[in-house]
Amino acid sequence: MRGGAAAEELHRLAEAKARVAGQTLLTLAAGVTQVIDGVFTGFRAGEDHPWVIIRAVDSSAFDVQSDDENILASVKQRFRDLTEFSAAGPSPRTQKSHRTRRRIGPKLAGR
Image (cartoon, one colour):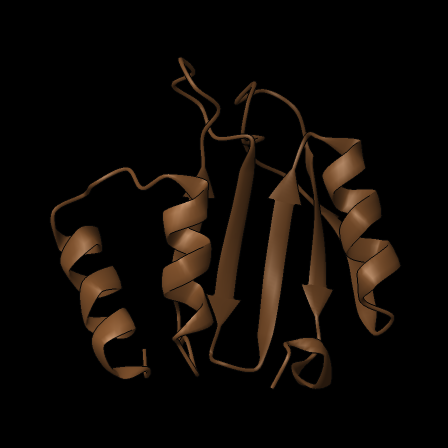
């Protein structure tokens, strides 16, 4: 991860396995210029299973996984160059169903 103090803080939080408020994550992420092989997992208050998982794949793409169709629709609307695919395995919330993931190409990663 590159991005100076923001990247260092994200590393520190990850090593501490700390849960970070969404607004804090957004603030820190704004100061990061590159993420390689990072995983960001979002939890709703009071829930133990994530409702969204975002994986930075080798700094060139992102996988977005969620059972929340609104989130997936938002990703699809925002990013034009994406590949939709289903993968066997646990879903973020139920741990029982298939998941839908969107791969977002490097031109759409905002850099």
